[in-house]
Image (cartoon, rainbow, N blue to C red):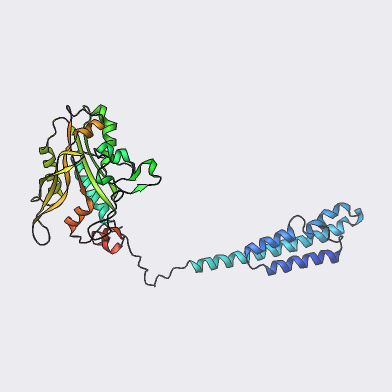
Length: 351
């Protein structure tokens, strides 16, 4: 350092005194590290005195060498002792901070629970996996062609209007939040149309959909559907009815069954609404409207590149929220969407 005086007993004693004062003032190991750098590192007074030994007269080298060596030894010992003292104190403080009072009352953390909608969806998909069906998924942001045109919904169909569908800006991109999981069925048909002889389609497509519905006890703007599709040779409405009856019995008991009522859907022809006979419904067994179904419209098969003269199929769709309401006597759909763990806890599967 430029302001370090030449070697003398007084200058060396002053440097030692400054170093010992810095050692005493260090309150933790970080401060001690800084003091060590200032008083023992390169450029410190003692290091500079040691470097000046090269220019000391030969007859005084032994005198000054002993003086500087003793000074550096005192400072080294002081730093080592203070470091051990501070480290011991810091370890003791850390142990105290981490000390566990084994006599204290244990803290009780509230556990979460699997959401009943997730459990209901898994139950339904497991039923169809048991039948050998495949579970397919697709994008929730969908092109209009997959969501409408390919499913035989022309441009003037009411479901395509702004009051029913969430369109994504810019409108020119023709993107919508899917209003049904049927686009997944169309994507599957397009992918598999050339291999139907070896691998016919038996699939279920569960997932979230969006429509501009009110948020009330019986409607949600974002809800969950499960739609089934079969494409094979010789498929009839009897296969559809048997599949729906099997689903009803698995979910609602051996006495459950379904019935079909004539309706119209662009995706299917003929089409039907299907009702559930709920044998254990609160207030007594009764018929309850559950979903829509029918034979796949030949126009839809043609849009997927499948010959309707060779292959036929059926499709159905149901709301998983409605299935949960029927099965567990949930009265208000808003309870399923608001995320209150007290609602989920009633259904078990605590995690």
